Length: 218
Image 1 (cartoon, rainbow, N blue to C red):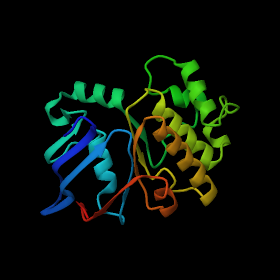
Image 2: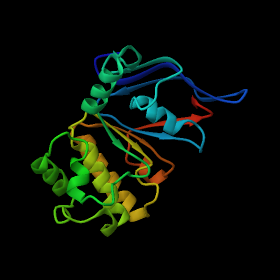
Image 3: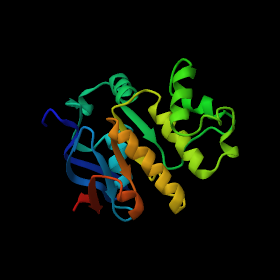
């Protein structure tokens, strides 16, 4: 790992057991992600893309091998230390968005914080083109607007790394381009971003593509 590497996988395996059968979701993955890069992970369903993202984000631990975030080996950390590292360094944009329907846009964005960060949340939403939607509920927004709220929520902790699982998966071409332009802008401001995507339009905005098949990098 050089000084410019933010995330590294060293022979990482993730094995699930289903009865007597072993499913190799990750099969000896080796990757190195540089700071300030914008990477797309692509491949067919079941190739291990989302598993890789979850292991990278310390939402799941590898069966064997090492994952390093800013030179810290995640398996060497206690659960509390893993949680603190995840909260400090990583922002997530989940495939199903996970916006709470009963909370306003502003409240959803502030949710990851232990105390209100109203001013910061409003600033992020304004930068995302949602300055007039603070008090709306998620159900009152379009799909593209909901996705921008999810991205805003991922930014509230000022992370070093954004992990986004299919951020344009349910969007039309126009909204896909809007979301990818927002992510590209964030990348140009210094954020390292990794997205899982099937979308070739989305892939045109990144500067690095990793293709997966059957748990392997190809």
